[in-house]
Image (cartoon, rainbow, N blue to C red; front, side, top):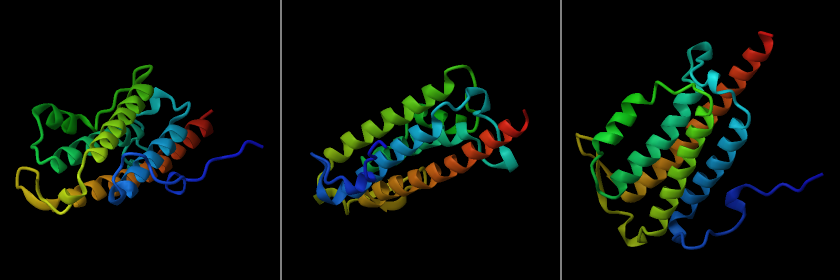
Length: 175
C-alpha cells in the first residue's frame, strides 16, 4: 500500500514564507492538491452542468483562480484591472471544449504559484495595513485579505467536490 503524505499543514514550515503567513500558504497548497484529485479525469463537456441548480464545476474552477487574483491584488493595495473585471464577469460561463478542464486547472495552479510568491514577499510588518476592497473601498487589511483568500478558496474547493461528485454520479446513472 502506497504511503500517503499528511495534509500540507502537517508537513512543516514552507521555506521563504513568513511564519504568520504559513497557514495561508498551507491552505492554498492543500486546495491545489484537492482540486487536482477532484478534477482527475473530469469530462470537459460536464464543466457547465448545474445539478440541482448548484454552481457548476467550471464556475468553481474559474472562481478559484479569479478570487485569488482579486484578493491578492487588493492585498497589494491595487485596484482591479479591466482584464480582471472581465474575468469576473465571465466566471459563470465556463468553457466546455476538449481540454478545458485541464486549462482551468492550470490557471488555478498558476494563480496559487503567484499567490505563494506574493506571500513570500509580504513583510509581516505590513499585515495590519489598511486595504480598500472594491469600488466602494470597503475596509480590510493585508492579513484580512490573505486569510479571506485562503478560507474562500477552501470553501469553494468543498463546493467543487460536492458538485463534481454529483455530476459524475448523475452522468453514471444516465448510462
